[in-house]
Image 1: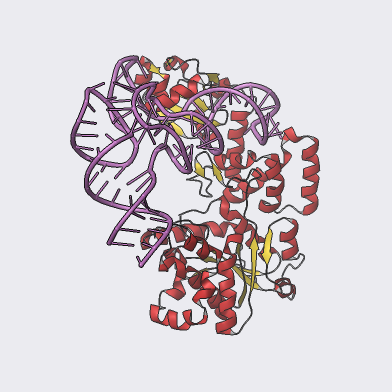
Image 2: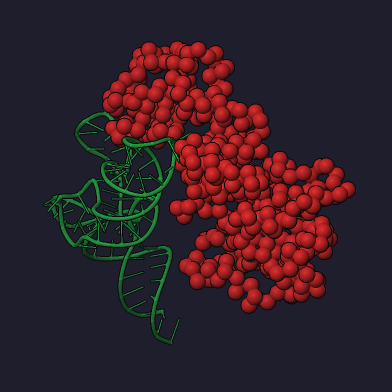
Length: 434
RNA sequence: GGGGAGAUACCAGAGCGGUCAAAUGGGACGGACUGUAAAUCCGUUGCUUCGGCUACGAAGGUUCGAAUCCUUCUCUCCCCA
């Protein structure tokens, strides 16, 4: 089986602005031919979120460059808790939750990488619990702990910060880097895996691995980290009003997912299109020129949102997202809903949070604040609803709600069934009266 | 073990007997402008049946009245040993 060796992995990351740090010798290793590398994913939740996409894209590039990617799901490391970037001790997950998370994460990774083609460089999934479950404590500290000094471990940023901070750090978390380091050692020894990649916050952990390989295995292994994605204004990437943007359609609907990317600022979009899509350099440069000429068309945002939504949610998910977007933000008037069948309406609003209320109650008339805060959970409290209405931030059926005392009744229903609520400009809700 | 300082809304941080649902800044949310952008400006930021109600680490107490004073407890930080 030949590998598609038409591109240089490191160069690829470099021009895309993804590369953060790379150990000397790594490029030479990769240029010699097919190499194996891995990235670890922590099963802290039962879905990956957009923050994980950088790592996923890194593995995709790695595979496209003809190398063999391993995705390690941390069944064992997940039980310990990575202190990197954490200011306080992490809560440990129970084994059942962990197992559930692992299964979910595995399924999602299969969307992105080629695991089954049978090619020499097809991806593989490994779970470090497999090699840790039979490894008892005494043997671990004898065989692994012996090779790394505490001085070395304490010098790591992730450890140093916690030692200086107020909360302290348990022995469990302190051991984390050694556990992760052993993963690398194990994969190096058993799967000929010579490169570990990860976010820039993982550098310390990765290097503990290469160190362990050097000392215990008298071998050589390499490290490469990618930029932590931040927004241009310095705030955290991957959160929206509601919280994390998940890859799981149950947690973040394809519509919401698409909207997240579509709402990217110009500045961020230009860097994200390089990181989160596979368009080549020429295509992206052309897009940027086009965008700068007519920024209001948001060419980049649209391409970005489409590409990622397609990859994550497939054609069907993308079409749904587009349909909803066009209806909600396009020029179509709200009356258009009246021309649709129930099934069509539900399809358009499938990604929009919806609530059901009793039609009988509505016929008697319901004050807006009750409608939005009590009968539905669009607002957390009536006071909140009142304020928002007074501030002019609420609309029903695309008409601003005048005062908090307004009363809505069955006559306001569209199709004798629906109310379309907007909180702010961008947040839509559907109320169904039954 | 001894001595000192502190705990206030999402965070930081003022207030030190009534005028405190609590200054100010940040964050968050909303409005205007625009392009579902950025920047800027403006507004909101405990709940309410709009009478009130619950809130300033916890529990008691003093007082007509407490975030503010007293007692005990819990926790945090600093200094000395």
